[in-house]
Length: 530
Image (cartoon, rainbow, N blue to C red; front, top):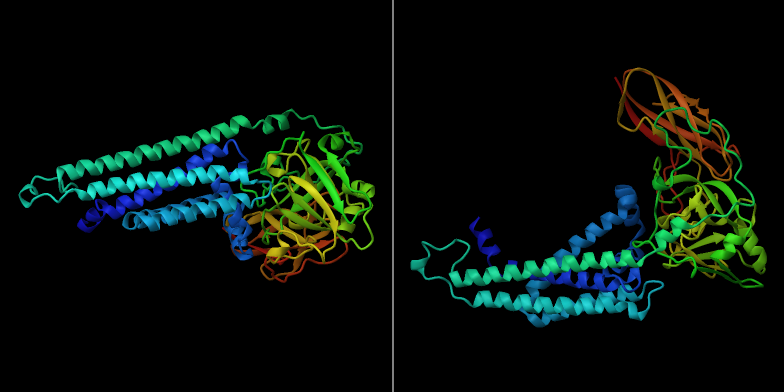
């Protein structure tokens, strides 16, 4: 206990605190000034985005499997802890050797600036908040280190005074000096918090994108989505809704800061191996002959039995119509789509030209796209995993060849093509559930976009496969729900499920990880019957 007390009142602890406060000032000042620059120019956003860019596939899959759609929140927490630890070390180094401390702060600033200026859509001027924040943090660190040296300059209390001394204060004057240090550190930290909050509020006040989105009136489609037949929803309570509400639709992307795009400034450029370059404004899309279509999207990172899939009604302009205007040249086989934040996806050209209703979507479930789902415009391509098709905030389409261009995830070890694999999922009962003996309702969802689902089967333990009842089919590009009445005997049991697609191909039992082209295998759910 005494050793801990001695350490807490020693210079190392104060230096570590000085480092944390200085780091907070760097981030807070940059956040405050960043309100007047690009949102992606703030240090945390830039550093986090850069980290995502260099994240190996195994770590990305671990994060999604562990944290699901909260992976970005987990990243921010991890970044905060890492920055705090590094700041503690930097503070101690600065106290012991100021020159090394200066070099450490400048190196940290250089890393932040490099992360900022390498983001897509960010200019050199956007580095100003980080540069100013770095020097502000350096100044604060200098002042706090000077106060620590002032504390240490006081001599220890004489032995005769030790009896009445506060155990945390060897010398009254030294104790007062220490208190002044902590007061200065606390006031500076509070000011940093206010600055960061002010930056957030200023950024929110300057942004009217959400209001513009809410006020947008979607046009009447030239072709409405076919009526949804009765009976698409599984009769089993607890099964995922057939139509996924916008607020519950999964979100997996590389954007830490959701891009805020003014529709008046949005423009799509279609170029590359085409006879005629095409440029579209948002008004062009509003004036075009739009179509509606129910389409189920699936993330390639979805594990067996996972929930990274959703079904929505989309409104948009068929990409085949845009490509007709551009007239792709012979030899082209891929369209590289790029978002405003630099993400890119490689989509086979033929998929965008056939009749599957691949589109530039502007509407989702009867309202404009939510910001986090791609507002104002995103791609929706039935039958392909999102990493090769579902580009949000899309601004560029380049007609090219797979041999000539690589997309974001392809450069990181994933496949250049990504057709969705047949998959069945048990929604009810959940794994490890306890149910009463007797008739137990089992239900779930299956998908094989563009091929449809013709059969779902359930296996109890190692018994025979039994066919489940299929709900009505809306289309070949939406998921299909199923139900099964299980006569459950007491004990511990395992339920397995598999699907057969519309071509007659049975879902494979071979287990595969999401990398490089999607997970496969049969889901198994353990249930205890009482």
